[in-house]
Image (cartoon, rainbow, N blue to C red; front, side, top):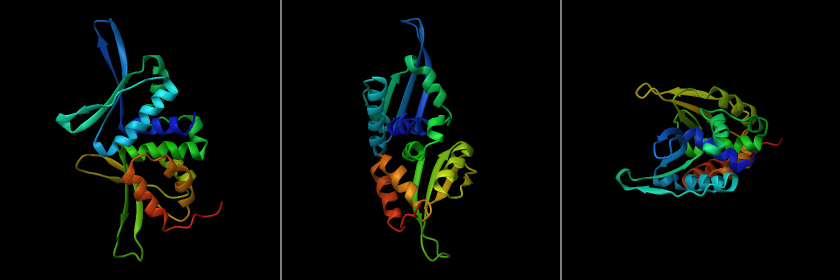
Length: 209
């Protein structure tokens, strides 16, 4: 386990999909990993591509899907299926849970995939609030526990009644600035999210540990 692999697991949990299909010509069931993303998320997909080559010796091609204005990467994972299934559905390996730097890389994968990094200007507060939100189909209870452990902040959930989605949210504060700067920011790949978080962290002097 290293930071790049931890990042890819986070990306799989957010934007990846594992599926099976029957290859009649070869008379076998094939398991595949697939990502389909928009143009802004291309750096994330390129990073996943590098991890697949480095860790699994999988050479992949990013395909253009013009009819959807999107890009896709897919590859068979039969030889490594046990590992990939053990990471599915927000399952976090023990190595990631027990290490702040690995969890920060995993969190970066989630943020690049389904994350939302924004500064809110609230007229009732003296200074803007910087918030990170991760979209999913349910509250990410296990991940929120680890965020509270390593980022030293409260996590709350925002429910969308229209699409039944849930946002797992936490604020950027002086207390968690060091964790975000040292463990999360270096692992982000998508440019506008790197810039947004960098600008947020300029407002805070990291707390001493």
